[in-house]
Length: 623
Image (tube, rainbow, N blue to C red; front, top):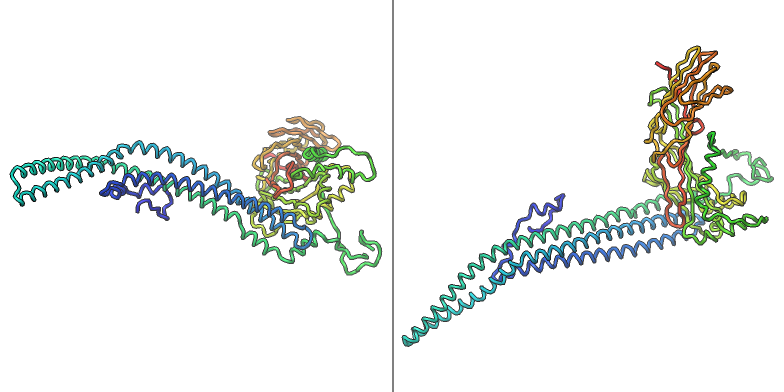
């Protein structure tokens, strides 16, 4: 069938390869009205294109209104009480509703792009129709000519028949010869006229059929193109709607609700509101006062491991803090008189200013430590361990907002590229996450706002003059892929004799280990050399510490070579230590994004450095 679309075909363009021109055989007819029908059908195509554009525009308007309504509803959920066992459920409602609103707003964007495409087609269609009208003008003349000739032919035929019957009637009635001659002349004239129009009609019919055939083919091609374009537009429309339905993921909301059991809600409440595991009256508990202790209750200890700073850790830590401070400098405290209640005065002053902001500024810092052990030149024997931690920084004025609001907006964030993390250890007192999340590359977290408020209030009481407070949020361990995960690949060679020690260290910068690649700064190599070194020659120059029998290089690129002259050799090949750090990049590639409204990310600080064990290089003797 003409203009039919076969559902199993993979390409809409196939309509041109399977269709045949059948319109010329369908639009001739006795009255020759086919041209008029086809021409107006072409004009109706432009009307349908405009109507489709208006339909999509109306759908976009409805979707936008729905998205805005969902956004308002999400804010309603975020304003619900964060107290009580049911409180975590509101976060599920809020996140699901925000996702629903975002999906529908994305559909609005796609529909608006589709409307532009339809409008472009409407303009092209109008130009093509105008061009076609000019091209088929000769066909219109042929149609009008054959219609005129047909009418004249019909009249001449009727006149011929009438004159012939009149002559026959007069002959039968015995009319005079003079009257019969007059009638014969009329018949002859009618016959000649009729014959003339028969010939004209034959000529007009030939021209009409030729031009009508060409024009019908042209009109059919236009309609095929029109239906094809409309199908493509409708396909894009359906695809956008379908993608939105998939992204909405109402099933995810249902799944989260089903996975949120009574036990988990009770557990979350206990974690956020618990006042302690020690029973009152225990004389060995740090928090107890008197009363007897329960001998059956096992003693519990809290151990907190803090990362050891590298040699230049103080300077690096200060630089990070300065940057965090600069990111929230626009709401820093103004000087106030020294009074007893300093924390209250500072909180009252503030970072009012904060209350006027649409979103509260939050800074984040990622710090990763990398330790590696290189054994000879075999890359498969390289052992790498990478750990990291995430810290949030809050301006001090935010405490006033948290404490003055019965239900501050929940601070939620999403970690991306988490598939590269082997283990994530959140601060369980402050941070929550949904263990049922199926996406291995992203993880959603939200803070326990009452616990966060209490923590910040306590920090403010301990240091009321601070302009911001840092909170350790989570720690993690990064999956390593041996030597490929190290930003600096190393090999060390020793050659030891009784009088000299030759040392060579080859190193190569590995940008593929970082996301994104960044420069390694303050690269240092520390080498212990035994055997009582009396003289040292090295490329590049190194610093020799005679008291510790160690040589120190600060490197830029390439390799280092050294020759040590000994008085009590030979040396015993030792393990080398390498240190460096890098700003603006991470080895894990992990990143953070705030979810929802109420907060904005003012700084996203990233850095990594060698950890406590540095980079260790095992000996490799010269061959």
